[in-house]
Length: 345
Image (cartoon, rainbow, N blue to C red; front, side, top):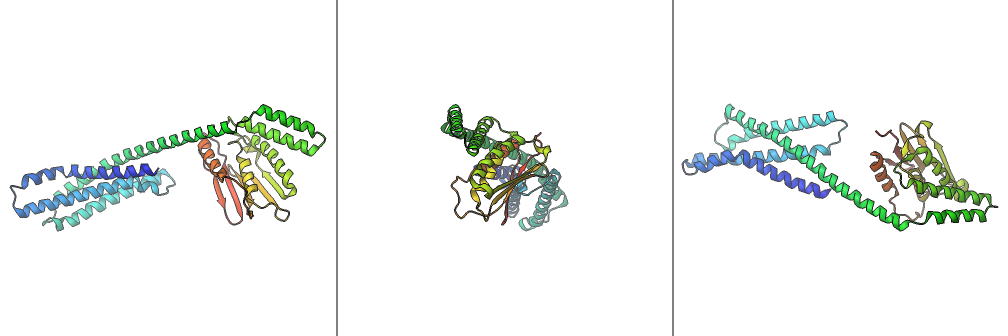
C-alpha cells in the first residue's frame, strides 16, 4: 500500500505543475512577445505577475489535489452527508483563502492595485481551475482504489496458494484415521470415559473434514462441535475449566466461519492460568446481533507455544467471508471478542 501512496504523491505534483503551466501559458506567451518591445519597468512588473500567478496556481492545485485525494480520507466520518459537508466547506475555504491572499499580495509584486474587473477575471479562472481539479481528484482516487484492489487480489491469491500448499502438506488419510479410532474404541470399550473421549474426538475430526469445504456453518452446528471440544478440555482440567453458554435461539440459524468459537476457547486456555484456586471460566453469550466470547484474564507465568496468529487469521477470515470485522476488547480484567451475527445481504 505504501507504494501506491508514493506514486500518488508524484502524480499530484506533476498534475499541479501541469495545471499551473497551462493556466499561465497565455501570460508566458505575452511575456516572450514583450521582451523586445517593452520598457524595463513594465517588463519587471510583467515577470513578477507571471511568477506570482504561476506560484499561486501551482500551490492552489497541489493543496486542492492533496485535500481531495488524501487528507479528506484521513478524517473519520459517520455518514455521507458529513463527508459531503466537509468536502464542500474545505474546498470553499481553499478557494476563498487563495483568491483573497492573491489579491492582497498582488500589489506587492506588481506596482499597481488590481482592478475589480481584473480581480473578477482572475477569480473566475481560479473557480474554473478548481472545478477541473475536483474532476481530476475523483479520477485519481478511482485509480488508487483500483490499484489497491489489484494488490489485495494478488495478496489473496498468494494466501490461497499458501493455504493449499499447507493443506497438502498436512493431509492425511481420513479413512485410515477413522479406522484407527474405531479400533481404539474397541480396545477401550470397557472404559466408558475413554470410549466417550474417542467418540468426541472422532466427531470433532469428522466435523473439521466436512466443514473444510464450507466458508460458513450454522451457529448451532458450531456449538455442537464446541461441546465436543470442551468435553476434551474438561477431561484434562476437570472442574478447573468451566464454560457458560447463553445464546438466544433466534441466532442459532445464523452463520459463522467454522471453528471460530473453538479457536477463541482454545486461545483462552492457551493464555490463562488454570488451577484449583484460579479456574478458567469462558462465557459465550449473544446480544444485539452479536456473539461475545469472554474470560477473566489471569495470564500464565509461561505461555504455551504457538504462532500467535490465531486471532489475526480469524479476523481476516471473518472479514473476507462476512465482510464484517470482529472486535477484540482487552482491559486489565477481561478479554472479550465480539463476533457480528448480522444477517448478510
